[in-house]
Image 1 (cartoon, rainbow, N blue to C red):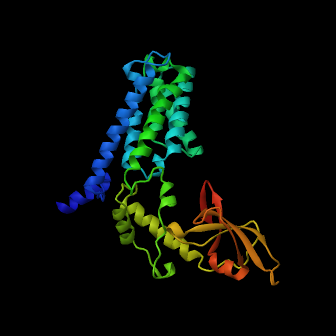
Image 2: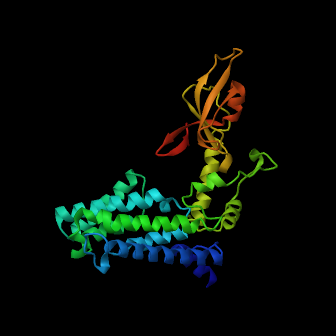
Image 3: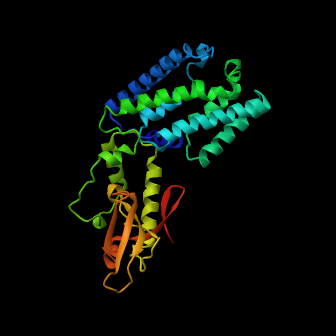
Length: 319
């Protein structure tokens, strides 16, 4: 029976929750405060602008889902400010346009959600509640549809501003929460290991321990984590030598993990084999971002594990 129950939980996607009880309470309280402030702020504005807003316009229901993301998963990629701002506004614009062209019909609703998803992909702002914002613009009733494109400003933009302000201030109260997540890179000091990182073999247990220490909900299953780790190891085994040639304009990574990872672009180089055979570089990603420096060619080659290129905001190894 126990085995059958475990299998059922796996099929249903029920994962072990590693967050502490205090973290759960903080997330719940944050979501409550965020929604309350958003409603009160919108209510106050509705009394001072020309729009006659009914109670249904105080807050869009999709912001309940946004509250879950920014307060329960503040470090998640789908929770960051650009995702919240652009995800809702782009989806709202798509929804209003579809309603205007096709009316409040099932076809218009379906097209609105589909287009919203596609546009969020291409604008790098995937935010699941955005689909509900687009749907609401089509099927939200007369109180919504009569607003036209002003729906983007009130209540959508107002809701966005309110909930983001609360998320930034609320998460700042807890040192292990950083929102936006980029703040963690600015305030967290790199951990100095006593042994070279090349001698460390990462395991699934190491990742699990790190997640538990982080004490924040991570939107990745154990199977997904294990698969990601395995693929990373396989990818690392493909190229274990340093690049033979260093060239101006190319990008190189030191192949590290975490805060010590860096990508450098070669901006100039001396004549190979001469006394001035040095590499002038600029850090373009990771540690010491935007700093410039100079190394002898062989020293730079030993620092560089492999050449990389950027694709859709991610750095990939050049095959």
